[in-house]
Image (cartoon, rainbow, N blue to C red):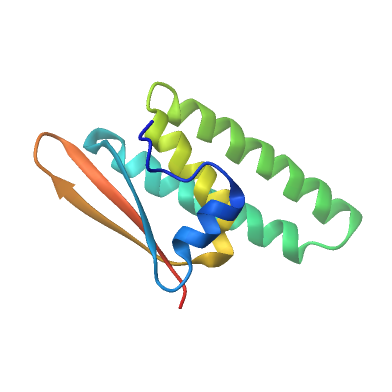
Length: 116
């Protein structure tokens, strides 16, 4: 893990405030898996917020468990990917866009850009 990555929730929010950004480098082979897990996390957050009935909440919690297990499976062996997911989960409301770019050598850089 890089030393310049924020380690607390307050540091993450401070780094993203005022259109700030946080970047993570990960293997390009995991690009599709990263995108799918971000979609799963978004869907999980929406389901937890929208389902207010007893059965809806149970279904949302089951889906959240599925999303978390798939997240752990995909990010094994790639600490930067796990850290990127953790930042997304803890500060998703402070993130305006997620940008990605290919870097030489089979590496991609994912950048979370904060809201103004």
